[in-house]
Length: 209
Image (cartoon, rainbow, N blue to C red; front, side):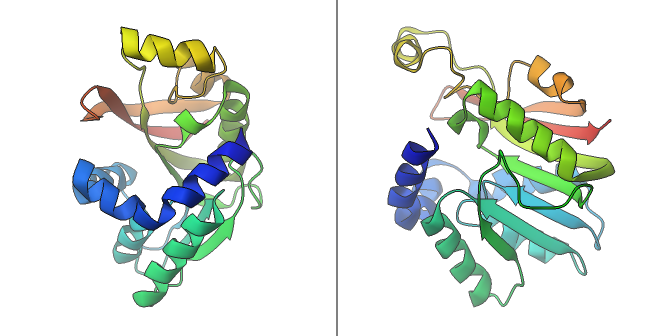
């Protein structure tokens, strides 16, 4: 699965930002994510599945003396993100890697972010990713997610799920048991925008327990 996702993301990397501008208010969307985190100026944060790094630039504007780390599976996404950060002279530490095996020490971050990552993962990968998030978070650390909720139960999505099966790919961060099973606790949850007209995004603030 990772091989397919990497190829797909590498293909779309060059026009990913213009596409988002046409389909959503990305600044408002990502600002809501940042507000959920209630960041202090000196925190260490990690953006998993960072894409082209738009959230990271906004985090850099927010954190005066903090440290921002970001990781993505697709090399071309990281290449675009690095260029954007260098243009603004931001010292964001980008790395190519998988959410299921994060190359960071235990208890390392105050806040971890994911944005529209989990629908790329099967259920096994979702579980591994949540365990990795728990591992790298400091005690009382926060995990801020903006992920798809359950997709509509209609004919179109039924056809898609018929081909993807019950692996979890195209599902977001659900069922909720996935979260509690990995010792993360939901402190706040709110429905975000409908992407593509019917794909509900759910914003969550979770805590390491």
